[in-house]
Image (cartoon, helix red, strand yellow):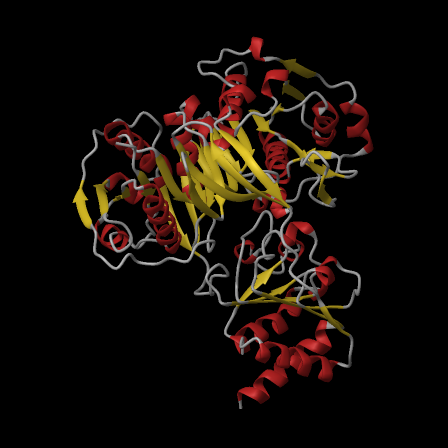
Length: 326
Length: 261
């Protein structure tokens, strides 16, 4: 019997299943259908039942491991050690995780513990006779790749928003599972958890992102970015230059060392669109840019490129949108 | 404090201009190697910690023969020495091999902290640092926005970025910390630093110098590239240059056509 495909879930601080895990579960189920292999979800959390039930909407079987230590310790290493113990017992062939910070940390620990390779930041996968064929990219999306594991075991991390989550239509079975606890890696206590976002919309979840760059000129310049985001029902993003200048927080940064977004509309104000920024937004459905420089890199890949001063075009657009909204 | 900074030479992402050569391999015309961006933040953090607490910073890279040129910039920024693991057998290595080699190389060093960027700009897997910490049994604190060691107590506090804000973590040293840009902009090498870097020691190690428990190198890579291609063009760009009110109407029309508003 060929080994199963597992989806290792990520659980939010409130005990819920994160969206990326529903996307990873959908991908795992597709691979299972193509290969005829079993698909199993794994949830390791202080109180796994809510997330496990949510995951069971996507896959036929979910192993729920209760692990109280995660309540006040860093999750990734603890989760990885428990999953590694389950892997030894049940012998699956492939693990799918989200390529989030916690998912990458968990994948890295699992790779070292199991001696399995990782294909990271997948944007899709299909079954290719003997194993999964993983679509991805290197050099910040400059080159798209198809890769495979050389052996019959492997770990895949899936990029956010690459796959559309689709429930299976059947409620899967949730099985409580116990693992012989053999923590050999240091467990790191969390002394304090601080919420900072002040209810600001997450740029990774937003349907519309309005982003500002160096051309915004300063923290005051972000007012027009924020007003347009409000008018469009979107979230505010920024380039690394704007974040490094202290005009806006790192949580809003899009690009190589920030977040990757894939909104329906990306409205770029005062952004030149150099490669480091491009990698974080190039798969947006529609890209509209307002910039004074007619030769900026964004002029080559935006769908609509408006040459102009964002402090003139921005307020005019705000007035136009408000007028049309009545 | 003795701090080792994992410093990966990568093709300069600022240059771009990638295309496929006749042999289907990536060509980066004129792209020279630089230290990976997130590793430079780690190096800056290490230099600041040593300025505050005293100590030495060692760069560690597993890279092709040409890496010393790239490492020299890190030495010019202020790192005290570098260790360069290079071996023909490492060409074509996967991330798991890199993880094993870096862990084995760290076993040859003594340190209080190991700092690394949370990911690299080439492969961007973001998994190697976690794996290295695992193989060495070190506490692993990732996505660091602030690092506060207490050398007398032998402990380190790290502010880890979370989806909603941050978590405050604490661990005994030695520990491995994954670094983000929130730690602060890397400094530019001074002229004095550049001069001094010329005489700083770069120790070359080959696989024969390391005690490896598992096989490594291109011959045991866990994955292989099946095919590669350039991303599809996004299509034509519509460019407009009109007075603000007209431009605003054009944008609103464009968004309405695409049923976005």
